[in-house]
Image (tube, rainbow, N blue to C red; front, top):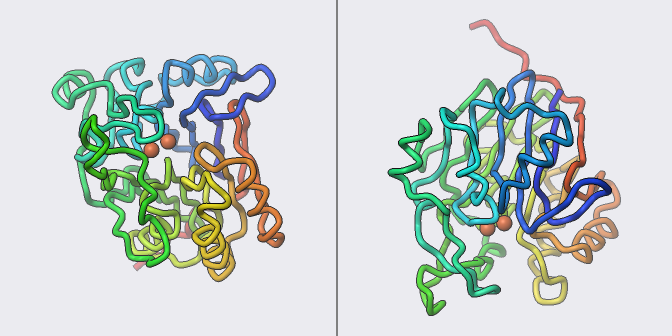
Length: 280
Ligand SMILES: [Fe+2]
Ligand SMILES: [Fe+2]
């Protein structure tokens, strides 16, 4: 069983306040960890409303350094294992909002408070759960121009967001893949997850795909839909940087796929089994 609880997401949901950010509590076959920390301390407040004790979490995977995923980091209790790509520490600025979009804490300070695992390489951080490391851009139709930040205040140096990564969980039914913003492209992320895990069947993809303009990105959206069909993906959990009209378009054009809209406070239990162990 994989359980997911959304602590920070762009959409409000009843009692749960949203924000432009992402943080997800995950339990995979009894092992708990956190993906990202949202844009503020909101993830702690929503965790409290969900009766979640984040002290039980020892591992936090940061999908990339953007502040809508890392501004919550200073609010974590010390002593966690924090896994991230080295480029997550880069200074960067938002193209859309023209504000600082880098991590709120420098590597040195973070290392004083936590065990920090900085790696470009994939890493199995708990049984059947992989941090994907750096995602190569191999699919020709995506990720070009899908970047949200620059490396300078004048917005001239494109930030290729090499740190943009994700998590893949191997299960009997196929991979359960989690993205943050999906800047490197969701299809690139899936292709990389297959290589890292050696598993080609994809059960579900969960998170942001950085598809926010249905008209301008129609071509990449259509090709993404064809790719997901070809890969026989069973479930999509869409939110964060996927706009409502893009989610609607996915729903219209992927009728064979179960599509779920993310929002703060939503909880999911996905009935998946851990890979069966083979005795060599
Ligand atoms: Fe984001
Ligand atoms: Fe991002």
